[in-house]
Structures are given as C-alpha cells and as structure tokens.
Image 1 (tube, rainbow, N blue to C red):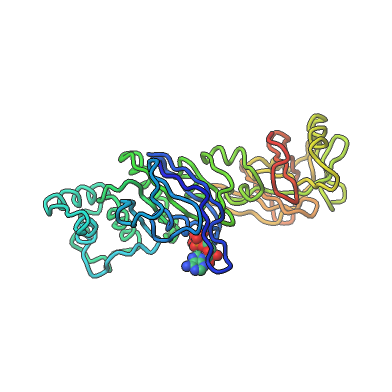
Image 2 (cartoon, rainbow, N blue to C red):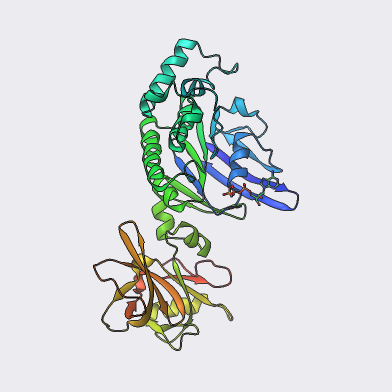
Length: 365
Ligand code: ATP
C-alpha cells in the first residue's frame, strides 16, 4: 500500500499541495481527478521522489520512503510528454530501463520481456521502427510498454491519454483497464479528464487547491458528491445548480418570478432544521434526471429552449428556466426547437441540497 500523510509543497507563494492525505491499495487503479493547477503533477512527483515535500511523509508497505532516491523506489512514471528516445527504435526504447546499471537484467531476459510486452500491446510490428516515425497513439503505447517491462511496484501515470484524439483515448482507456486487470498491477494516475477518470478508476480522489476533497468509487462520488466542487468536477456534463428559497411546501427559484417545484413537508422540515439565519440553498440535479416534455403535467415548470447539443449518441438540451441555465438529457425522440417552450420537472428523489456559501451538502439524502 502507498500512503501519503499530510503532504505539503510550496513554490514561492503558491501552495501546490496543502496537507494532502491519500492511500492507494495494492492492485487498485486510483485516479486523482482535478482541474488544472490543483496540484496533481506535484503530488505524483513527490510519490516518485522527483520533488521533496516541505512537510509530510510518503510510505510504501509501512516503510517511510520520503527521502529514498527515485530509482530505488521502483515506481514507473509515465508522463503526458512520454520522454521516449526519438533516435532509438522501439525495441531499444522498451529495453532501456532494463539495461540500466541499477537492474543489470541479462540480454536474453531483456529480449524475452520486451517481446512479451510488445505482443501484449500489439506493437510487435513496430519494434524496429524509430520512435520519431510513430504516430502519437503508437508512441503512447511504447511509453506504456516501457513502464510495463520493468515490473515496478506501482505505475504512475500523469495525464496519460488526455492529449490524444477521442478515438485513440477510448482505445487506450480500454487497454489500460485490460492491462490493469490482467497483470493485477497497482496504478496511480492523474488527470483533469473526468470522462476517462470515471471510466478507468476503481477509486477516484477528487483534488482541488492542493487537497483531496473526496475519495470513492466513480459510482459513489457520482451518487453522493460531498460538495459543489466535486459535482462540478466529476460531471460530464456538470450538475445543474439553482439557488432557491424555501417555501411552506416548495422551493422557489431565486429571481425567477415565482418559478417553484414542490418537495415533501419532511424535506422542508429537514432543510429548516439545518439552515441557520442567512444560509442560502443551492439545489443540484444531474442533467440525466431533469425531465423534459412537450406537454405539461402537474407542477411542471415552463422553460425556453436555447439549443440542443449532441455528445456522441446522447443529446442534451440547454434550457432557460426562470432565468437560470439548465441542461437536460433527452431520453426519447423528442428534439425541441430553438426558442420553443417546453415543460420541466425536477423529481425530488434526484435533488441534492448544498449551502450556497460553503458549497457543502446540507444533508446526505
Ligand atoms: P495540470 O493539470 O495543469 O498539469 P496540476 O494539477 O498537475 O495541473 P501542478 O502542476 O501540480 O498542478 O501545479 C500546482 C501549482 O503549483 C500550480 O499553480 C503550478 O503553477 C505550481 N507549480 C508547480 N510546479 C512548480 C514549480 N516548479 N515552480 C513554481 N510553481 C510550480
């Protein structure tokens, strides 16, 4: 198990990592997901030993390794710019780490491992080609192969596939998952790409401002986001948010000329109990839970269609609901026209309640 305890790292007046705690279990595919500048790369560099933390410790299998030199940790690191040797051919790039004086792997063993990994990654036909003559996706496979030949204790991947085009990303995503499962290896990866993080990870750590703000399986963080930041970071697209005022049996959308939706009395009571004077309510709902219809039902609200967006096979409609932007997944053949009026319902069981000021959940429903 890899453990980071209370790690901090400051560059001048920038706090890159701020009291970070993290545990990565053996065999896990752990993805740190966070926006640019959150401190992901710095955290990975500290794990590798390429950066010294100002405070805190790194442990591996219960032993402190904070000050152990990078090669002695036997962790493999794969960057976005994968640092292959362009003048060498693929075979020599794959063999390079094994030929390091530190490992002194005999040449016949080098050949066996390189050929086996090349077969695994379907790059045997590329072994004699110079790296500079390969496509971006092929280079990424070679970089992955170079990490795999060494049989390190942990694979550390920094934005491994985010610069690739959509199709290649999907292909490598599947490849990473397959290799992770077949080899039973431990992977610690960092990315700002929520789609690939949610697809690949066995557990996700959401990072913001140098801290991990929530850890869980992709499903757990989706169902139970701890705060507004998590809901914004993991969603593709993001959760919808509407500031609301509490009525007797309803929530009234702020500044909307009395657009409201009904909630159970029990919900109103719970919210009343939790709110202190001045606390404001932010209601969240995933686009896939917003109901949209061409005809009205009981307690449905009118909304105006801004446009329809296609994400692969899925289509989303952007609406103006009482002055608030809201996105909804369209689940049937109904495609409303720009500028037309539709009706919207926000089912209570799909609502999340947050404090406007702190962004934290008011209660976990
Ligand atoms: P990205 O997704 O853009 O790679 P990140 O989450 O990996 O971002 P880091 O690269 O860890 O973030 O950077 C965190 C903060 O620390 C940023 O504000 C960055 O500018 C700063 N930083 C990182 N390395 C250095 C350095 N060597 N010197 C000064 N500031 C640095």
